[in-house]
Length: 74
Image (cartoon, rainbow, N blue to C red):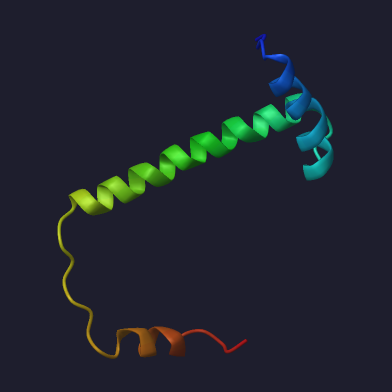
């Protein structure tokens, strides 16, 4: 796949971001952007599914206290 960028975007992608974020190359940076975009889509779907599922039932007052008791303190 070939992608055409304007000079300013190419300079940004091949220089600033690659160095500042520790990517080995502009290709690695672009792959990171695509993965991040895909993950954002997944997160948006989860949020939409939650909103579409309707109101939740109320939690019992001691729900979080019991939940905390199941894990060791840090």
